[in-house]
Image (cartoon, rainbow, N blue to C red; front, side, top):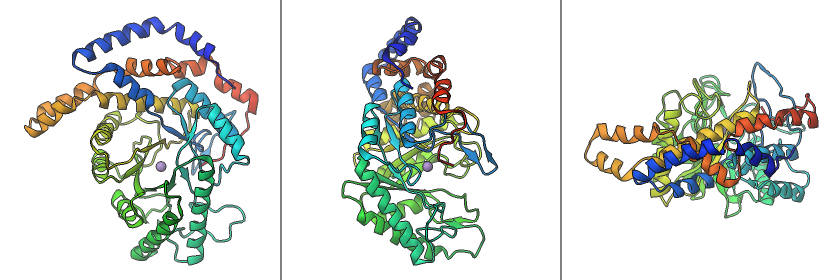
Length: 426
Ligand SMILES: [Mn+2]
């Protein structure tokens, strides 16, 4: 399915007058308080988030999976789906591939298709958390940390192959997330497991092209329930430092124990120039992979405040690889991703509104009340007209969810692909 420019213009036409009055009102009041509105809009329009190739079908839990009709059955169809989201939102200009679920058959054809939809290839993701068909060694007891050198070698070789595949597409980063750990006390020797992991990561790192980055993701628990080898940002940072300067920590919002101060983690990592990748999602209890901003929007705003501060003040930290890492059990995956993109843009816009100079001064003066006022003034601003204006100027839809429904995207996809297709993924 294609969405044509004219279709979006027709849909936007009916909303234009309303939008303009809301936007003018906000722009005027922001300008009065000293904000450079056009610059804000450019920043919002430039902010692009990668969509993972596994997020376009229905996600499952360990209890079951309820398919969506019209799910993409091939990498080509996944890129077409991201193309649709990008067309509507103008914010999803990248794809993050999972290997081996999405190995291209024809590299040139895939690159052409992505270019047609203005989609870049972001970080590639390896998979040593499950066994593949015809795989010689099993990852049942871990991969890069395994007690068996044959298993570790196989996992290292897989990661190197993922880099090779990504390199052919123009990717510049490898994301490693390990399920390695133990479910029972005594099962693992912590020190041996960590040492094996470090050595395996060094072997992968040293084989990467010199313009590539290694993102090391952490997670406190699951699938193992007693210990995880890379359990937290400290362990990830230690491993990254052990690899070299192009190895970084990746923060996934869902990979923390309840009430962890994620904004502080972000801040410290950026100060050290070691925050490489960022995965968006939201959660109530654990790694719930819910729509971004659906549970803790204020926490997301505080995290964005530190990200914005770091982007402006920490030249030692590289540009970040942004990705949505969510799962869609009960919602249309494309609608869920559109809602996530909207929440990301809103949190970013609100963080951009914070008067940083005034906040620094209030912090220096220990004016606690004013510090809170400055943050909450920005947070309480309805920035949706700004986000809409950024989308409008980039050629997207004023209301992407409404456009998605009016254009009957899901119905069209089911008509094209059938109601029984199942996308690869979890
Ligand atoms: Mn993740």
